[in-house]
Image (cartoon, rainbow over all chains, first blue to last red):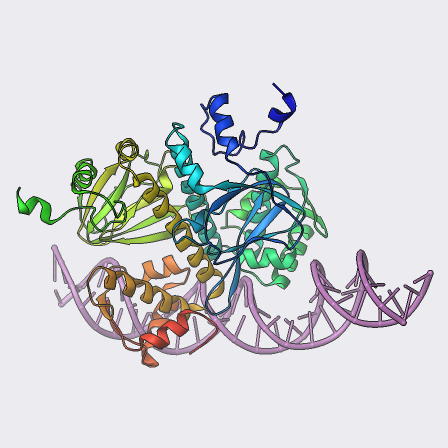
Length: 236
Length: 236
DNA sequence: CGGCTGTTTGATAATAATCAACTGGCGTGG
DNA sequence: CCACGCCAGTTGATTATTATCAAACAGCCG
């Protein structure tokens, strides 16, 4: 068979495929995934209120999800990078409660949900895997709620950077040097802080030698100390 | 058949059973549910780190889930009332990331997860329903994150009371008068506020005629205004 | 009755939001 | 090509909100 076609499987590392999946079934799974959707910075993948049809897999680039409540309060609910799947919050009510917006040039694959559910009746472990992904998301949200209700600004920024660091590490990039794809405003929006507070925390972390920042270029200098700080119970 | 046995089906209103489910299948579903687990105030249903085996359905009473991070920071991640199912966050890692503790005398039914997954291969729509429940939880967590990062103390308390109110209404109790099963400390812990702040907000809401409080007995006097307040963008 | 816990209230301190000003980079249009 | 305007980011001053510390009080149970 054509090696090229198999060289970039969508789902090999996407947590959707059960670990024991055979090649045939992996192909079945990938067959329902629509490769499409090239987005540029600021483009919407879907908008809050749109009918829910699909989950999305980030192939490259990054996105944010934003929700606006009845009173017009906006909030970034998540950032998503390559290999991550998102859109889960739309299932329940049949429409997305968030908008998804590209932070840079981004490629997304679409996973039609009804086809995925059909397939999960045939591929053993697939629906289990789906549940695990949602469960994981719930656990991450718990961590986020703890961060929002308990940590001061420095600790929030530290936790945020460590989170990104782990993401990049898992994807084979440097865990210590990376480029942020979001603005300070977006970071603040995500972490529940004003822009100015985000900026000051970056400066403070830099002054103490924990990180080195130049615009969006970020370097972690003292990983251990950053971990301690991110845990709370310690201040700079 | 014995009317008594069917008079209190576990799952009729628990969102787990697909809406179209026939009586036979409802019985199958209920057959795997273990009725047991009577808890008294302060009793643990499970502890953080315990192996994940089951979801739990609250039959009567109420519980809280509490998580402790590595640094010893504690946080209440949720309150659960009759007809609610919880324990989802344990699936992913195979152990519960929270402890579940009864707030009062409480009866819980256990739903062994592997049996539930087995059954979901036979009962159409069951695994779909499971996904919907998780999706709903994720959406609720989003709202909670918005609350924690954007609302002031009064609005948080207002939102909290409205949330409880809706719960009681859905369960056939008064939406305007109810008894809180949690302490002020626990409310603060859940909402990311100090006890004193919770107390002051209750007092302030009462002074403005929105609610009437007497210890844990709570009455909503101005539902509309409470909604406005809970939305943010408005202050007392 | 006395000790415990949970709640309330007051005074003060700390943190982050807000308001304001300034900088540097970038793209556009004269 | 330069000037201008715009946006993102930073820094400073001030304000507001909430946490913290402290004290008093109520209810409950042994």
